[in-house]
Length: 399
Image (cartoon, rainbow, N blue to C red):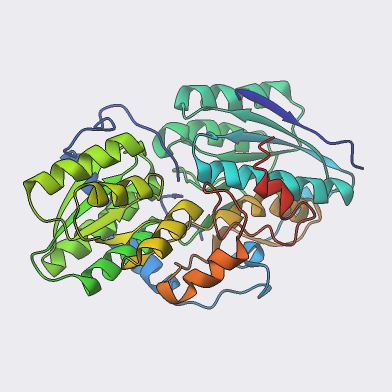
């Protein structure tokens, strides 16, 4: 799915504007390599770590039953300069649809689009899929700029540094830019939408493992890919907390490939005991669990994600687990934000959405709420009040 035209007939800012997905930057280890580079230590930021640590405990503002409209410690910005009547055309430069998390969000975004088209806020959303390529996404953004038919831009960057100049060029058109999911190194977008962030994920998951393991125990950390800020922040936080607690952690890039994940775990089990498994994304979590089953060993303490395949395996095995969340409902928020901007309403400059893990005592509730959903679905997708629920997600209709 390289190019998509989505049109229906229905009438915080921080110094590194940064924050999941799969990509690589030049000079960083490729997926499958067993060692990381020293440069990755540069991703740890104590101030951002502390900020996200505290945000985990903040009660968000906004509607209690609409988490995709909630915000944490928001600095609101005036958008009156963009106020205008009529339905607007959006141009969406998407990093990819290459994993279940992004596919789930894309389905939800399109259902939200239908609602905004019906209300007359948005006319269409022209979308280009970069297929996990920086070069392609840069060309996509430049295409939209040259085309000159975009009333607003929505961008989910493929990677952080490489995409910064292209995002800046979109801002320089004077049209509103809405950034979400991953960040770049400019604060020019009108709003940047994301859950609390990678450090929060890393804190939640590593503290859970530390609380359920003993000093000297071994954890295998499975990482998707280098060079994406939210993923690097997850590991930077976990690595610090494991080190402080005396937990031995070895990390590998798996590319999210179940075969590679099973091989990594099997190889580590052949060396000795593995007491915990930490993941920076839940893709392939079931494969990691199956490696222990294949070896006839007890299940590890494990963190996965709110993907249904992991939640169901967690329930069936009874392992000690936690499902961290990188709130998938954020895919609704960019289009709502665009409609607010053209209505001249204030929006958060850094729109920080809640990001609450699923603990064991909430597992049964999320399994019940998502009964009938495919394994690649994400429990906290936030589309329950959209007209297509539940059929569109059950049938996995990817536009």
